Image (cartoon, rainbow, N blue to C red; front, side):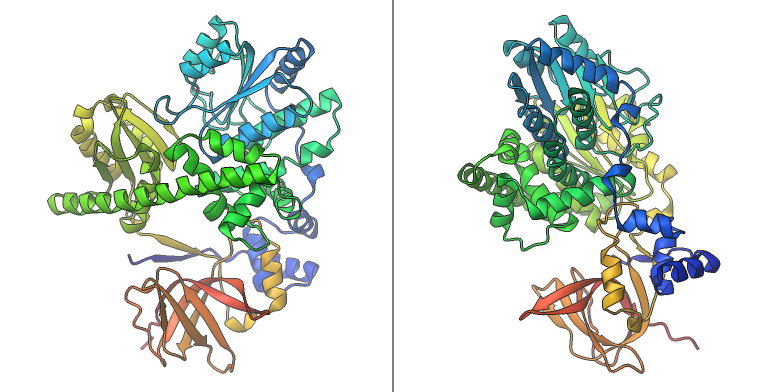
Length: 570
């Protein structure tokens, strides 16, 4: 697909110049910081040197005092507490965090993760019944529960109190739980609203630690799990998330727990572990357990105390990931063919595809894959427990959750957020839904949103890039939403060698600026299609920068996002 290049507005030259002088850095680097809201020496210091002391008090969260008081009471009276979490990365890391941490100080604990296929998302009646069988009188939900009012009432009827820890948008009426911890509550004064579910769970154990006067050392050791959830759940990498992830990455690199070390060894990762390795290495494997079989395997891996136990579990989880990948590829191919067939009948601006025997565990991934080919809101539906269930994914700038709300008359239920959602509907509504959803998308989506956009921070010359420049850009990590890895544009560079194609999908290309002897190596993943560049061609490139090590020699490498011929001005 052709992509639109969108260059961010240039900030005030006075602000850039002042920051450049204050930090003794070049204007392009100062520009990157001002674009991120950093305009003073003190703000830059806080950005480049995250401080654990800058975390907000957990007691600023609405109901935190009630939650801690109820946990205190349970511990004092020897009650059985069940830790209940969702089956994705955020949910499983949350369960491992809260259960693993509390179990160091209290033993009457159980944990529960629902089965994706038989129970579905959120708090299930089966989960409540199991908690009752275990003799539980307190349930702590993690990464779910904010919309589970009816099931929480059912738990109360069985004598089970509930503490909800969630980060999703609540409905108008909150569940009648003992405490509802969710920074997105409309009446919650907590200053930072974008924590992951695991981040909310961390705030809970931080508050409990403070009141119980437990040693804080073991608390900070849990930040590795918070970092994994924050990266995998694609929440904004600003404020507290950036601090938590910064120190969580240190934990992952310096003292990885046995399950994480087993993952590192299985994947073959070399240090350092960063956001990219979590998102593309850890997360798919942790998720695969719940997609293919049961997420309990992921929790057990994260809680493993010995290397041998972890090695056995990671082998199972990795096998599930291989099965997931095979199902994902096969279903994606079928879905793409269906979209192509539908497009021949009508000019859709959305994609809604259905097949009754698709694996429910991978349809969310398939929806994302389809968006890579057809850049538009996509819903993939299948049959599950006698219902038509689906996963929906959106494109930047389009509110998927709002669009589903306008189709709610055709749905049994739906939930999620702006860019990802789940839904169920009667099978007879599929065609009606496809047409109505497309009409909603057509009436609300901007034509620009239907073209993939590469957001570019600034225009630079290749001569601006040196070791100091690269080092400072790297210190802007961890990268993620609202603090993305900087993308640059450089115009009119010359191709100096024949392009090398790699695996028929990727390219390696060598470029040189005018009036410069330096040749830069650039790699473009998935840019081989139409790559007819030849020596002497003049091209514009947009790219990020990374480091390549070959035979113990490190060089700066350009990672292409896109490349096009330079337009000649007549």
